[in-house]
Image (cartoon, rainbow, N blue to C red; front, side):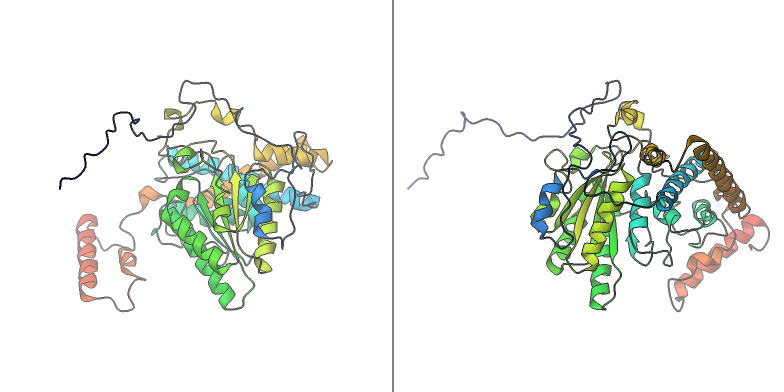
Length: 429
């Protein structure tokens, strides 16, 4: 008996794949009119103890507090006192000034690499302000505002960027990949997705120990396509871990737009729906909205009501890093066309509207911060800049790995020292 002849497929359409493409490329006029920006204050604020599904409409909405006139409106208004608002403005401006100074240092050849967070300053600064200083963050490389808001010395940050003799990490991390346990800042990893499961694991350990500290994991829109993202959400959901999982959706990964990570199909906050956890989508350029949402999620985690996935909706105003030229893949005027504005300008307008700030004080603060950052840079450069590093303290690269150095590692150390002596014509320091 022969097999029946398979049916003809001649009348079926050929299969095809959808390859996401950004709407605008260099030379095009950017147009963000397709982005729905709801009125500030329109999003409801569920109770901290509400069931997760009651937050799911907020995964496609946008939590906003500051309106177009800079006035705080709606149920998410955290009603912060003027001193706190001024501190947040100062920290955000400090980050931008620091970024500009270090970007210039890289262009001058003083370090190899730098990454700015221009346009995203409100996210890290407001999140740090909303959380307890003892809570721990598992950040990516655009959360320098966490360190600034927690009082980490700018000189120490610059020492790390220069990998000089003052670098507490001894040049073992790429520039800007800071780490400081005291300030609750877990080591930055170049493999960004790993921060999520590590944050969940730390939060689970905190709960097992009966501690009260929570964790916050950070990831970019591009890294949500990594398997680590989903593994972390599974554990967070199953064990109701006391963790906040932040997605900073700044529209662009290194040079690929957010559609390649699934942004065309759903918001990143919507991932919370499938895992049955609370989710929020927040205006990332609104410092008050970021504070309110982060504080809500922190209170929820600390009261054993489970994790929250927060999408901070923002825009990367400049390049991915000093190695990137964004004009090669997006229109030059796109940052200026972004509909949610500049986070620093928006917070300033809010303070001015409260009669708690003015242009003279703003200008004075800018001058003060410029002087502070310049002084920090001068102090850090006393320890040296990156091109000056090389043969000093060679044995340190073999330390802090083994309790007892194996023979073959000791042999490599002696060989390196011998080569350094031959090159320098003296004993390396």
